[in-house]
Image (cartoon, rainbow, N blue to C red; front, side):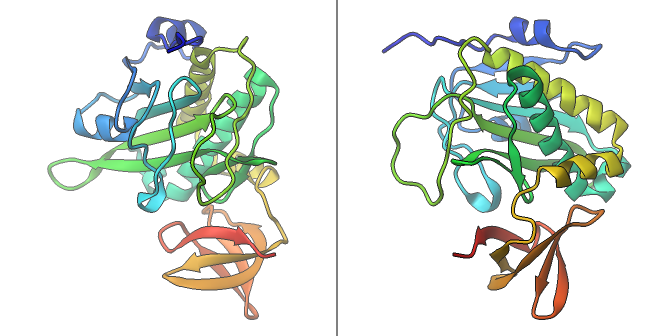
Length: 260
């Protein structure tokens, strides 16, 4: 087996950070899922879990996120659940997407796009995704967010056919995964603390795919065809369908596909 050319290192991640504090960082060669680990281990706020490989990476609605060794970033942040974020979970997801775009652009110069609500894209296909889960206290109130981010940083090895085209971002080896992780975390924390919904959504809309395109979405178990009009102030997808405008959130709408 070839040695890992870009090893993950908590000290290197800290070195690249622009935050004013040093979070707890746990780095693993392999985990089932960084989100699952964070959920099961009662980690402190602002903690980071990183894995070189996931063998059961999680996507939305039980989907699998393919996470081969040495080629990607698979990480989870543990963030405190403030009231403003609990009121706007769609905007919270949008803010993480914007943070990832800003970090990748700043460090590598590569511009990603967003497919509503939580997928990250290049022209060749999906290159990453975001999954936000919650941790509840003894009174069943949410007190933490588990923010999972998966990115195909390098070119991907050949894999079995998946249900959609996937792509590696193609970040050059001169830029380490440690630097990218630090940049993503720093951008995410900055947006999380400021949480300017209008500014977040303005950037999100600029980079959101398929405006004015005809799509089919799975909505409450049914296929609904329509034209994307944009995203509203709650980060809901606006879909013109059958002479009405539907405002869809991620609890009822998923699997958005372009119509041929």
